[in-house]
Amino acid sequence: MNQRIANQLNTFIVNIYKAMGTVLLALILLGLVSYLAVQCFFFVSHSWLAPTVVSSTDTQILQLNAQLAQQEAAREKLLTERREVQTRLEQADRLLQAEKDFQERFRATLGSERRARSNALRQLASLRGIYKKTAREISETNLAYSDMARGRTESLYNARMVESEERLNATHQLAQMAQSNLSLTQGVAELHNKFEQLQRELKGFDASLGGKSDGLTAEVLLMEREYTRSVLEVKHAESERLHLKASVRSLDEAVARYDTLLASIRGSPWLEAIERGLTVGFVPYENLENAAAGTAIYRCEFKLLWCEQVGQVGHALRGEVSIKHPVRQTVMRGVMVELELSDEGWAREELLHLGRAPLML
Image 1 (cartoon, rainbow, N blue to C red):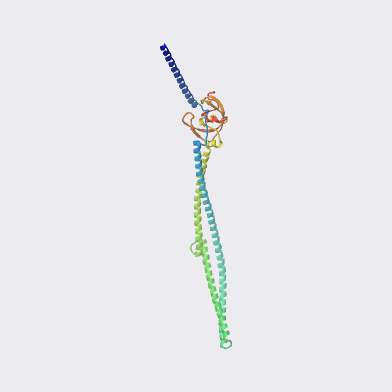
Image 2 (cartoon, rainbow, N blue to C red):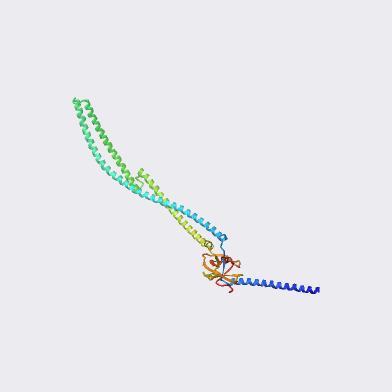
């Protein structure tokens, strides 16, 4: 009896082992078939997308925001430098214009002074001639009158016809006439000196206007020094102006490059999704033709079975992104598209299908 029970128990245990082995083998085969089916599906199917939940704390978002802040700071630094260079350029322009105006006024003033000296010289020449002639006539008349008056006074005094006081008065008048002659001679000399001085000044102005070094006077030479300083300032300002203009162009080009870079960063699909509060999905390039706007979106149990429509595809976002394949570990390139889902929770699915259910289930 005991042996029969033992045999039955052994038979039951063996049957259980066989059943468990069969079940385990079936499960392994089912897993292998499922794995192969999923791999074959992704190998032949181009109608799927990977939804992505974008958060402000995602690594990509943090990196993009850090790059954006860094590039904006560098761009602002360039703009500050450009403003400083532009200020220096405007100052150089003002200095250049002021010095050129000074040079024009200098040449005009020099010509005006030359004409004034020429007119004064002509007038002085005419006056000197008249003065010399008049002085000579007055001197000759005074001399003749003095000789005659002196002789007549002496004769009358010797004849006791005039008193000593009258004689002294007459002598005093003659001395005054001699002093007048001396003053006239001195006036002639002063006019001559003034005439020669005007001639030298006129020659100095002519030499300066003609760009010559001979004949320059001390006054004109000092004026020429100021003019030379102005010419040197103009040369320096023009050279600095060219350098500053080149710097402004270089800075403008650098700012333009930063603008392009910033526009590229701001146009990233990740930042656009965050800023606009979008629900997005990744579509590989090979699936992009099946992800047109308005295409129906399905989600399935176990990735491929028991599917239902959960929304539709919106507009594609600008820019390229790269993420890992939802099943394989390879990195795929593609674009982000806007998802219009009936329930935002479907964005947490690992995989969604485009157009229809994958196995018509």
